[in-house]
Image (cartoon, rainbow, N blue to C red; front, top):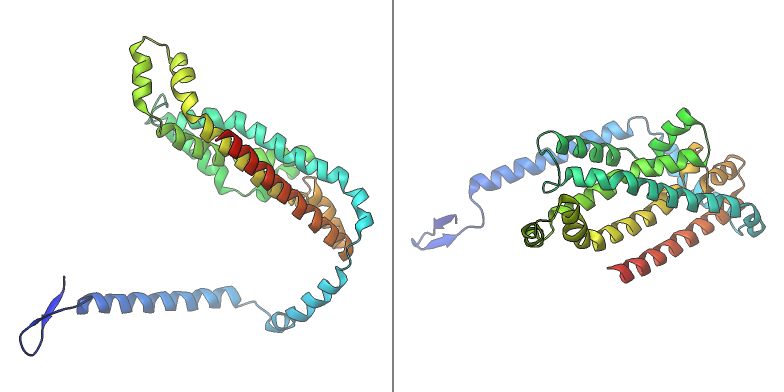
Length: 272
């Protein structure tokens, strides 16, 4: 605790020492300098006339978006169904691949902490590092446009999310239950069935439903890169400046996300 003496010789408590205060000022100065530098780098190619004109342009586009073209809904049922299928099938495919990865990544279930676990962690980090749109862009170039590319993109993006949360749940299980099962002479499969799986099932159910809810949102925009779904219609409507159709698509996306959020909450509440 920094203390200095007053003129009368009485000790006076100080919140920080002079050296600490100096270091804090230097740190704040460096932070401000870094902010100014980054701002200059980000805005060096900015045309400020367009920025100043942005409110007028936004108001103009907003006026064209209303009223929404509700009769366009007849053309959205198919893409909406594709969007739901992309999210659902992508999530199921991710579960199939993520569960083994999670068991290989968990310290208490991996066969090798030195070799196998780092590989599993690398798969998790790689999946989580690349956005679904980038996966979609790559897969459309590799296997062509369509719903299948969207499903694979959602699956590859979801592996890391599901596996990371699941392996953390595996590592947090109660080891005393495993020891009790081992005392009976149970096999490795029996330890998995009766010791580990019952403990992680609530977390697994919550993770799965939560990821499906996220994938509903991500799949709505995958069509922007050619991976099918509502995003494909959205891109087409924007290209022809059909702003009434864009509003209708926004409404459909909003309602779909709200319903998926409600379903996700109900399922998690019933399972956990």
